[in-house]
Length: 635
Image 1 (tube, rainbow, N blue to C red):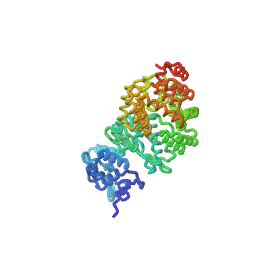
Image 2 (cartoon, one colour; image 1 turned 90 degrees about the vertical axis):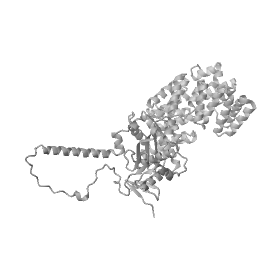
Image 3 (cartoon, one colour; image 1 turned 90 degrees about the horizontal axis):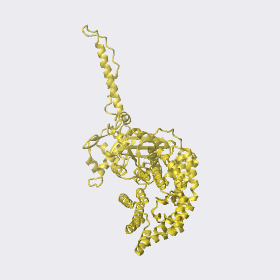
Image 4 (cartoon, rainbow, N blue to C red; image 1 turned 45 degrees about the horizontal axis):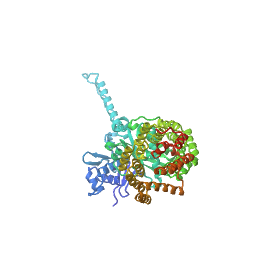
């Protein structure tokens, strides 16, 4: 006999097909929340204890965090049913015991209406009542009695109106507007977890990640919330972690999570806001858009969240139409940009601009890609002017776009070697978006080039606070550049504990040890970093050099490795000079630094901040080079 389909409100729960449907449309619900919803529906109003849930969903001998698992499953069920935990239509929390399914099943969509609604009168009572004969007014009744009866009736009518209003307030949206949640007002910082791709097609991950990135961007741009940047948030993609733990690691009090589904013509997004300290649901909403209007979703969502948490918001600008195919190509480009695959990234930004030449964000993305290509992937001369033209075009098309000003700031610093103009553009980007982590990071390099180290440290710490995962080695690297080696070692050791698989942290730690004269620790850390970079043969070769001749042999081995790479592909002259600087070879180091100037290697702007070159500071050739670049003398 087939299992009974549970009907409640506008929903149908079909056990045989393991489906939840709303008005005939199948809703996406993961296995654990679906199993729990079926259990609650089967119990038909009886309380289901948390222990019953654990045994049904996970079994008795379980070694997972079932408390968090149950809370998460209930939250996802309520999100799918659009149910409010404070005024539940379907799932009621029984404090200290468990949960109860409170909807009337197997009825029509009105069966789940709030209990506060006035009952409908029986059909037979609806017939018209014949008018009664007017009664004579007794002589002893005061004439004021009709007035009192009128006031009583008016008061009754007022109570009915108020009752009706309270029934209406039972809807989550209306209640939140009239009685804003105090929990929402406590949210001052936010992390947007990667939107789950519910399309059933892994090739659509770029779309989910791209929309996550745009939601983060719009929230950071349009509100006064501190919003964790994209790269740090992406560390939690597909993570099965308690919300409180994620919030603590990112230093936020609010978490926005949700899902997105794209069909051939429509986009459906569901999101919910959680107050992390108590893992409390604050607000949820679903959005449906035609595909050619999907680009407006992040902006709409940022405005709604700003209202929910009652923070200041920038005035909404009139939406600029974006060709959906151009938007799709842009999302693919940004998705690939974070993989540093230049050859795959460029065609998508170029395609976006072919489809829509006035797409400012795509011009900024193109500029960033060209600049990245010139930082170790291609000779800088091949991309310098292309990057400048793209960055300028982005600013011309949209002077209010922070990314555009940050792109041109980066160009002025690394390719124009003009820190003063770079600083003006970086400050403009931060005026437009004070919580723009990448602009803080670029400006920290600007200030370092200008020898304003105290200000640079403030900018670097702000960048790390807003985006702790993108450059977990960033603050340690700053301490190396300012010759604070003990601070660098302490910071990088902490980062190593927090992120043991981050090879860049270990590379910086190895350099800090070397500069401190701790050569054994430097060698061990270098080998570990090479293994994390999936280069075990290099780690073994470095080890062999150490065993044969200690640190001196390893330094010479590093030069040979640089020469070997140069024979196979492009290696910048600055990288070659760095390899020779480890050996203390003054002539070869200067030779390649001068070649890096002729090659116009972008990172040469940071030469004064590299301790490896300190032994050259009194050399006339080095001083002449610094003057040619336009940098202030070393302090």
